[in-house]
Length: 377
Ligand code: 13P
Ligand code: SF4
Image (cartoon, rainbow, N blue to C red; front, side, top):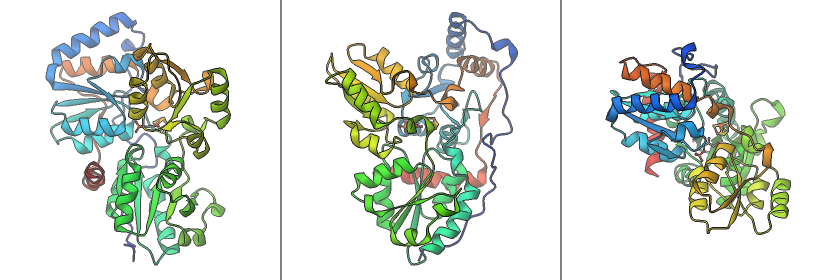
């Protein structure tokens, strides 16, 4: 029988969870690139080992070129765990910086240069809303143990909720392992918030007939009989950057570039992943292009900054965006502006901290359990 208790967490329905959000001072708004680069380098030289910069693959060129480590969500959380710098500057979005704060020691500070960098998909599964859905779902499947798994793209309070119910966190590179962990412990999985990653993982495990969907915004999208009957319940969230890709884009890119191969992120729709040659996390996409033969053509179905980086990093490979000019950048990732980076670094060099992400203590411990479970699978 599932643990029916619902945890009580302080939670905030706003995307901007942190009330210490500070905007960029006007004197930093119009910096010219050369001057800005010099100032960033000067501040970094002064700060030395006190600072490490982590940059997600979707960050702008002007951020990743200053990063000590560039990677996918999983790699960056491992780097955060290993970092011993006093300040971890996170080039990414709020949920990634929260995870870094949870994983790092108490005497380290995690700084998200612009605290408006909030992933819309993470906002599609608020802990309060999941808490009440949990009561409905566990009642619908009262004979089964349900293990909740949340994608890394979620806030700390939801990660804490999952840990409190025996669940864990996963990223796009280890979702299948998280499902296996959960099925070892229980009968069913509730996966949040990305239905596409959930569906693609169910297919990878040969469990595609076990999928039920849970749409918290639509009374008709919550079918108790289906939940009782199936083993994988998918929350109805998605990433708008990845939902945009269609099978027709793959057909078109193959027609325009004979011999081209296609790699997409598993946040894409099921039919797109099926039609592609390969699917994987942003790290897998990077490795695939790094290992390609000169002259190969690869079309990339993910956030467009990464496609642009891959074109610069591997000029010997023909790297094309899967849907041409219609490929999107991630508005949340784009909030990390290089002017913000200059500001937070110069202020740190002057002994002042801004835009520090501090997860509430009552969430931190349990969310840490959910992250540790992921790092151990
Ligand atoms: P990765 O885990 O593949 O880096 O992806 C994170 C993300 O936000 C994808 O949209
Ligand atoms: Fe969130 Fe999508 Fe941006 Fe990734 S690309 S951070 S899932 S909005």
